[in-house]
Length: 634
Ligand code: K7E
Ligand code: CUA
Picture 1 (cartoon, protein in one colour):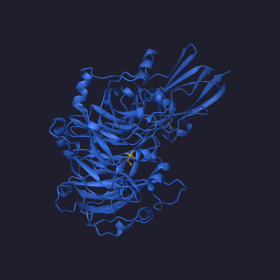
Picture 2: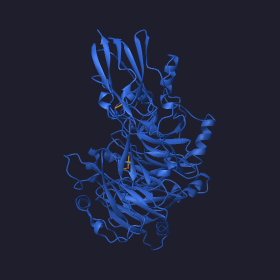
Picture 3: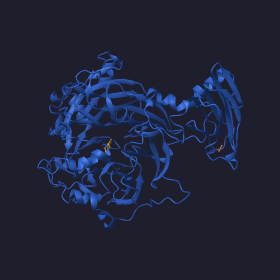
Picture 4: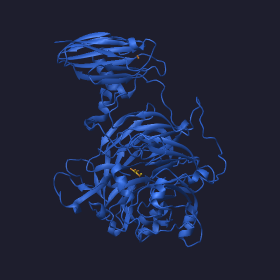
């Protein structure tokens, strides 16, 4: 969901208390309480009798977790790595943000990744997605969107560092982010959220009927945008199928309004399905246009009124759908969560096949169930036993429902598809069960990312942490087993089995992350693994030094005021975890140098005098003594 400002607003959304929203749950037994109750009370579930846990979620000191959790850092612009089930935060990976600890945004290596977008120091990450081979996590990459500055980033999971960032043209705000699952992740799909004139160069300022947005596809390897499709409405969330043929996205604002009442006007919005082979073929055949200065092939997928085009299918679903999630392990269905409607819409991918083959007349014929689940359904996740779990923002609950039974109920049978409800604390957004976006879904844990923590933690001023709760879903009854305060603002998270991630313990000397710096050294005739040298090149000075606990290879060097100085530090330590830092006092410079890594920084020496540098990462008993001087002549 959106910003904190929006949160207050969504609580009093007009219409939610109106006749548009059925007040009764279809599933029978309904634990729903009033909105205020959902926020201010809770804990009813804690006393609920649940069957004993199959497995203790407690991870003792020194023990390792079963899963990696990849958490969006929201407005912090980063990605965080958690251990599950302990919910211990293991690491923060800087992506779109400036990071004082690692020097992200300071070093030449990170600036190369940040590129022109690095002019911004902020980001808003929502949807981390780990790459697949045959719909199983392969541990290569984690991709993440930036809603704030319209970017998509790729993180290398072997070193847990961002290695590519792409700014997406022709759109504003990347929100949806999802990946091709089979045969492997070769495409990354990124949905533009806000509608804008095309090109957005000052034309049509006052004419929202000429505002549009697009779905973009990136090549996962090069991170270049390979095509875009113009759609009707604003794109929200997206997911792919398990065959590589389709991508579905939720679309709100089907009337393309620009004010809240206008956006909430229509009774029906859509899930739009993209026919990926047809789009790729059209691009190969040159059947596309371009927009403004952008060279990216653009295909027109507008046509909701007719149900779609040869590239797109618009499936009407109740107002403002939010999450789109394909059900594992076989990916037969996807679920669009209703948000402003108390329903989830279940679509069968095989029926999407039928529609594109011309066998169905009405896009709604692809819908196989529409269970009523509770108020404010935002996202849906799954176990390996045919159950779906939907987050209910307004009810502050996770509701567990059975997909097969929901389909039977849709076909007229009298069956209760609701299996369980648990109160969460409070106003849940995303939720994700262990391995639930992959074939390996195991139905053990579910992370519930609650937007409000209210009274759950010691107060820390007006600004509260979020509350990421861990729920044991291995039994018939859900059971909350952990409260985890998190800093602003995780939107989505996913869990990957620990053995599916293989990280490096120390850097390889030929790591591409610092290859350009190594190439520069080579041109200067410097062997980084051995040499400590100062190269003077006109007004430029390049200082190559090693670090080996507790020494920098150069403890003083002299430059002239106004010279451009590049400092390159290579950490010769080979012992895992013996990292050094390089901090140049009063220059805003600090960065990491991990074992066998090379890091560099470039700046202008504009202040005459003595300037100390020191190792900023505690590395040795003589760490405090690990320092040196830059002498700047007037
Ligand atoms: Cu907050 Cu996925 Cu951006 Cu829903 S989104 S909650
Ligand atoms: Cu090197 Cu501290």
